[in-house]
Image (cartoon, rainbow, N blue to C red):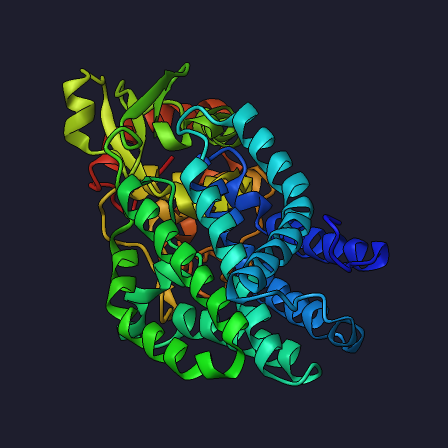
Amino acid sequence: MIGLPISRRERTVVVLAVAVVSALSVGNLYSGWYGSWGETARALQVTTLLTYPLLAALSAWLTGAPRRRRYQWMVGTGVSGALRLRILWVTAIAGLGFAGMLPVFVVACVMTGNEADFGSFPGLELLLIATGTVAAIAFGLALASALPPMLAPILATVIVYGGEYLLDTGTPSMEQYAGFVVADQRERTYLEPTPWVLIVQCFLLACLALLFLAAAVRSRSWLFPLAGACLAATPLVMVGSSNYSVSHAALQPVCQEQNDYTLCMTRARAHTMDEVVESIEPAMTMMDSFSGQRLTLAEESIRIGTLEERGTVGMVVPFAITSGIDGDSHRVVRDELVVDVTNAVLRGSCGSGRSGGYVAKSATAQDVLQEWVLRELNIPLEGVSYAQIPLSEDFVDWSPVASFRSAWNDASPDARLRWFDQHGGDVLTCDLQDDLTI
């Protein structure tokens, strides 16, 4: 490759190693990014938690191989010649790394591009990944130029991965630095990047790569000045703490009229609308009459005032879409979503939700209604797998509503509809009494 001593086998190892690591990392986050440009960019950046230390180690290993030291391929006629050779070397390894990442990144972007209704291609985030990749490779080269061949790859892996891990999971005081070196793992559904910040980050990483190249040319004599320069540049890293802001466009409501209710979701999650409707439609059909009031189910990230400005008709019932989505946001989990929506509709703001340190509590009429809906839809009640309301016998004392529960479960569909016609308003306004009859 471009006249440098990298064998075909070594090239294959680098490409395959990076491709496998990238595919496993992105694929593991599939449910969280598919359909959202913000989450897709985050998932691609998360791969750097593994690809940066991997490429730093591979760079140190390829550079420090004994046969290359005998070959003395990096001996130039002067400092400028040696620097040019090392730039070619870093470029060659970076090209192999990009060849491993590219198929994974292309597939992820194509999948999201075909699904997303909001957002844009994350060009600057990808440029940041590329610049960080070059810096990691240059760091491996610098270590290999100053340390024994067996030690350099190990130390490169430990330093890069350890530094990323520390910034990503360390004390709160370190969090302000994580956005620069480490993939910022915040929920990005409603966030948009600040372009100038990403450009500054790319520039700083490029400077860091050049610094590592200079250290590789000067070998050991540059290690201490390099460390001092990195420490002096630390305040610049704080720019990473402000690289995203809330996108008001992402929070705008997208509403869809259904037979008995209106569903409103944010633009950033509107691509899941059909899946959400398919998941909750059976439950809403079972609860289709609330004294003539039309319900508007609204993702709780939407401001109620925004819906009022749009002239949305009916009582607004906020629900937390995140509890019905796998991982961070984008694949609907039917059972959890139905539990959350029925909880929002039947309880509203009654304040009877139970979570956290749960203790057995007397059941209410709302519990009877939710239990009936979930059983009819074959959603299990046992355990506490849902964050909202565990309704199994282990957690709820049903004796206070035993008669109503028995009558409700034995009632005909027409009798239940008549009951909803009569008491639906009480359900929505939290005025439902526990001594009801049917």
